[in-house]
Image 1 (spheres, helix red, strand yellow):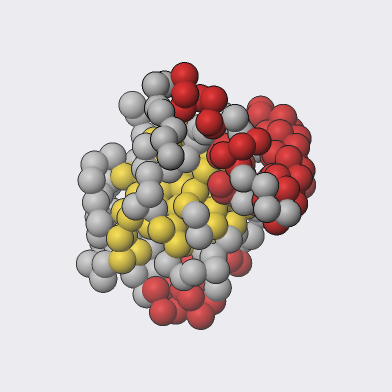
Image 2 (tube, one colour):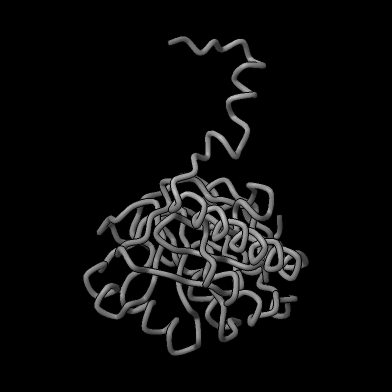
Amino acid sequence: MKPRVIRKIHRADLDLVHQLGEMGVATVHEAQGRSGLMKPYMRPIFPNARVAGTALTVSCHPGDNMMIHAALSVCHAGDVLVVAPVADSTDGMFGDLLAESSRAHGVLGLVIDAGVRDTFELEEMKFPVWAKAIHAQGTVKATAGSVNVDVVCAGALVRPGDAIIGDRDGVVVVPRERVDEVCLLSQQRMAREEQTRERLKQGELGFDFYGMKDKLKALGVEFED
């Protein structure tokens, strides 16, 4: 694929994306059919990190962060950097100076399938980051890559402009054309969960109202005194 930087992309509606962020990764993941979740090694670098924005994707070489700098030249306020090296990497490709530049241009956070550094400073800045590793190993600026192309980040397909939701449960991707639908499905799921919560508080067993006893009997499980 020829390296390129695409300036103009279609982005998901930010108001709807922010609503998804309020409902959280677990709810959104379940509501859209248990899809879009990144692998569990993608962890926030500080516990209360949250983000909800649109994907600004970066395809780059391991240990080379030049294309992250290039991405900031075409970012929009409300974007989340999604960085996917073309091969396995744990090098610290992003630190506090890039975070300062990102924030100055309206970028809300970072999701990177590699390493980050300067994590004390990033936490002090409250710049939310989800990464594979924390590693002080430095990087170079030498190799061409691409910005705003489809990437696979931590096992999830991410297209430019897709919704990116991150919290302490991980990161989930919502296709930009499904954001309206998934927002509604997530709201409906939360309403059902609230009803279920009230029943559980009253002492009802999920084992009973989910019909699990009948399912177990159908599977041949015998209940004995």
